[in-house]
Each structure stands twice: as structure tokens, then as C-alpha cells.
Amino acid sequence: MTMRERLLPQPVLTVVIAVLWAMLADDISGGTALLGLTLGLVIPVFTAAFWPGRPRTFRIGAALKLAVVVLYDILVANIAVARIVLGNVDTIRSKFVDVPLDMDDPYVATILGSIITLTPGTLTIDIDMERRLIHIHALDVPDKSLLIADIKSRYETPLKEIFGC
Image (tube, rainbow, N blue to C red; front, side):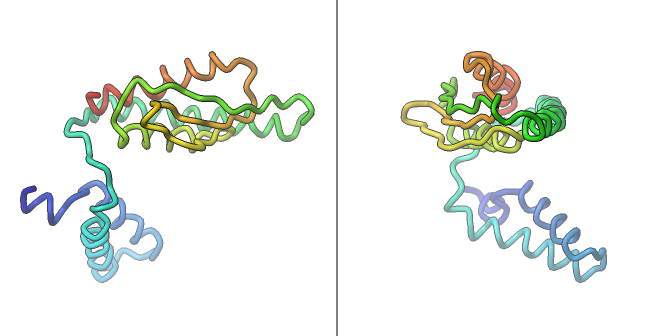
């Protein structure tokens, strides 16, 4: 491990923490920026042992495309969940679904599980890397195979492209 990797194990997380600190402080002064940067540098160093190994490749263009897809899906799912909840609750077809993984990287699988949870109406219950499955709960599932195919094509395939796995 190089000196840079020891001092800055998660550069993106460092920036995110610093920006979030400035947003929480609701102030853009030198002191706030310095404290946010300090937190952004210190927290990843002390939590580095808890992070799984990161993939070495990252394709920013594919990541931006996936971000647009995820934001769109979140918007559409919010509307769909609102309709379901405000409509006839007797028609809800909630189910537990096992989504098989075509990857063996726990870091990327965790990102996939997070995307699934971020989308309203779905929740990641467990990520089983030994069996290569993500166990999820979905609020409305008319067809399990269609849900699995959507998750694999909309999220898993782009994640595999982004991280080269």
C-alpha cells in the first residue's frame, strides 16, 4: 500500500464528507471548509479496515449513465408507490425475490444492493456472496422473472461495466 493510499484511502468519500459537512453547517467559511476537509481525511483513514477491497477500474461515463437511470427509476418508483399506497391495498402483490448475481465482487454487489434499496418499493434484505444472490423484498411484483431481468439489465450490467467485473 502506497503512502497516498494510506493517507487518502477513499478520495471520493473524503470529498463527499467535506461537502456534506459544509451543507450541514450551512456555512461556507474557511473554518467550516477546514473542519470538513479534516473530517473527510480522518474518517476514511480510521474506517479503512471496514471497507472491502475496492475495484481498481472505474468508468466515469458509464457511472454517469447509471446515475441518470437510477434517478429516473427513483422518480418513477415514487409515483408508482404513491399510487399503490393510496389505491386499493388489497391488490398489493409484495414478494421476496432472490436475484442471482453475475459478479463475485462484494463491493460492487453492495453498491447494487444500495441502488435496489434506494428505489422506492424495493429493499435489499441480504447479500449472499457465497451463493451469489441478493435477497430483496418488493412491494408490487406481478412477475418475479421480469423484476429480476430489470434489476440485472438496468443496474447489474452497468455496474459490471463501470467496475470492470
